Length: 350
Image 1 (tube, helix red, strand yellow):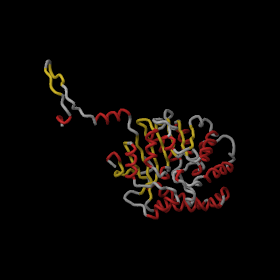
Image 2 (cartoon, one colour):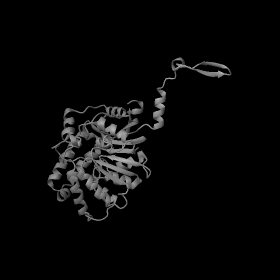
Image 3 (cartoon, one colour):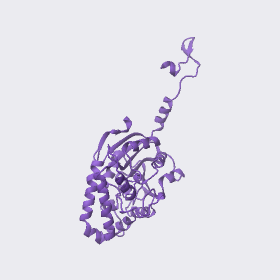
Image 4 (cartoon, one colour):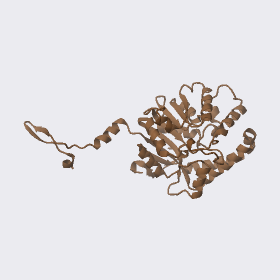
């Protein structure tokens, strides 16, 4: 597939952002999954400012209008290109029900639903982003019937039964899980929310293969990016397996994301005059500092990945359980007319 290279050592079958924002992780809160209180706040006002400049402050919008705003609409790397990969890899169409975990201002949900026809629930921790996501989606004719946004912590919503078990055909999450300290709890909630046989796609940070993040890089990730959960691909797979997922594959996106984040940093610097005019110098300066940190991290040991997998189906679960059964226990069976013999136990067959 385009957008990454498969590394055989990350093939789980053989055992194996969010373009972020502020330059300081001030006010970080564990209740917000380690993200800062101001992590995305500026984007809402910035998006509405941009729509005003386009002459679209009110009235109907198209998905293309919003997607044209780039990182103001799509809080992940590669923008709508990554959304196209999601549609293709998961095989989304109008028959399926999808959950987008960490849905931001709703850009991916709008684009993916508009292009594939699927129904999507976006779950987002930050209420102002969800409010804006709902309002913008209502302005795109025909989309609000297929898209719903829920505010809250995904794992808590699942654990409290507010999101029912076995609900979704697929989940997707694009550059979100790096912010969540309790990866095990989150992945277990993802597993619970999916129907048997359902599939998923995650795009996230990881350490580049055969490297170790330095103390300085880990500090930048925790205290600038608010990303306390960045591990190796192998550790990620182990966590997914522990949650119950199977058929896992990790695609290394590092060689794609590194030049993309570098170009983003350089292009943003070039856009100073326009950006300051529209959003103010403080936001511009903070973004430049932040994008520089990300650029430097990807030039070092930070990489990215796309992970896909599935929840076992009911028939598969029955087969796995059946393989564990013992066939001993005594008794007799008929062999030929009038002749019997004892049942053969598993140990005898072996």
